[in-house]
Length: 108
Picture 1: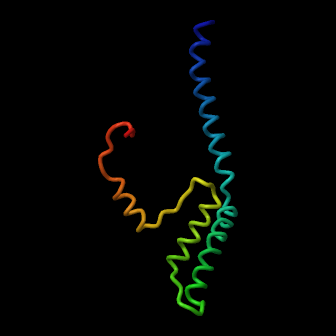
Picture 2: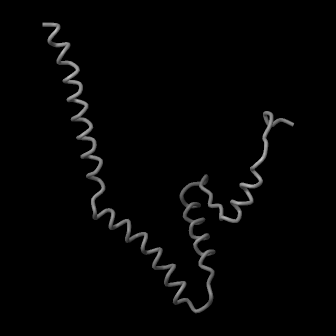
Picture 3: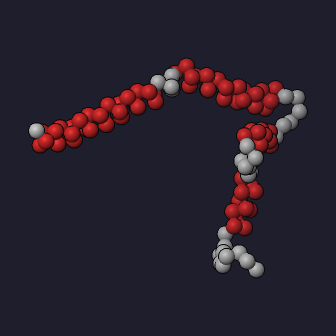
């Protein structure tokens, strides 16, 4: 009798794993309904419409790149104190200054 239970154990474990994987996949995809995706797109479109409105309807000339930079910086500042936005120009100079050889343990 012991021999039969040992042969069924791998089959039972395999079946349990397969059921777990299928159940997990079904539960995971149920949170991403088309309505929630559409709602997220509408929220993103709100910001895009605002930028378009400023660009085409505002009376004075506006630098859209600076508006986008300020907006992104504001979002990241509200996100947490460790998130920082580095504009492309500053990133290039920062990346250039970080290139080089670092030797030792940092004690001078």
